[in-house]
Length: 340
Ligand SMILES: Nc1nc2c(ncn2[C@@H]2O[C@H](COP(=O)(O)OP(=O)(O)OP(=O)(O)O)[C@@H](O)[C@H]2O)c(=O)[nH]1
Ligand SMILES: [Mg+2]
Image (cartoon, rainbow, N blue to C red; front, top):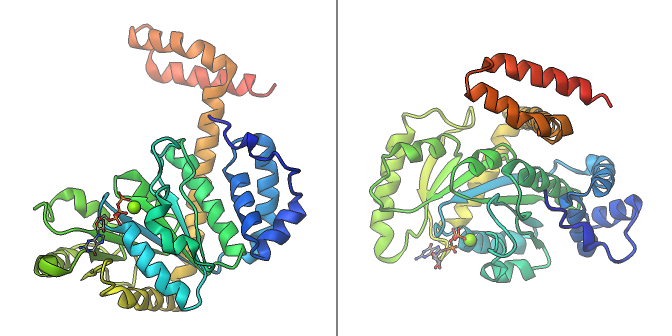
């Protein structure tokens, strides 16, 4: 665990009331501080952050939450910039967050390159926040989830959660958004590969980006191919048909239609009741995940376990103790020692 964040409060720290009022009034400086608070790993900040989250709860949940993924270079930043600018001009308030477990301050996170979202991050209606740095996916995602709630309470009516398309983080982002958008590229010849099947199964829409210039025809072909494949897959959202489209983040072609689709999705899902049902399910899943994580951390951080685990492991691998019995004994001793 790093305790970065601990030293960020040099000024007098705000009270929970001040945080709450500032967030609800959309005060950008306070929103930023509130996010730093929920991102902190210090137990003291944790308490305060939870109190803040409790207070803002009635103001949360009203935004449409959109997940955006795609391999590096797929055009996520370019699309968010273009799409985001359009939404802000229409009077929406947009928050752009990121989930990037591998990011570190030195290496720069996906949204660390704010320069690539230059126009958007300067727009008064947009709030762009890079991924919390470092740590395991679970921790990063929890923080992003809480950041999302802060943004909602601050009046942002559209939330984008960006993640880079490299495995587990996509599933995690899927579990915190209403609509999940996957950006794809043409070529590579692996359209048919199983690797992409997994991602197609959690997508609400697939967009073949860079459908411009000489690449346009290839993009149209890829779209047809994806649509053929999607036909055989179970849609990610019951009552919604996941389809493939072409788009150009660079020229903006297809961007207005993307928003039309997201709004019709929202309308349809709210009507069917699945919108609320999914959100409730997501919360229940997150709760299970947090419990698992918390229990696991407590176990491995327990002084007795830390001390004896290597020896017990040695006994098991040497064939001196049966595995299940060793585990049972460890847990029992942990439960007893944890009482103190
Ligand atoms: N021709 C064309 N180029 C595009 C389009 N969208 C993005 N690009 C270019 O593709 C490159 C990568 O785009 P980014 O938006 O940085 O991609 P990304 O998905 O954010 O990439 P990472 O941040 O590395 O994960 C840039 O040089 C963009 O200018 C498009 O629609 N058409
Ligand atoms: Mg990017």
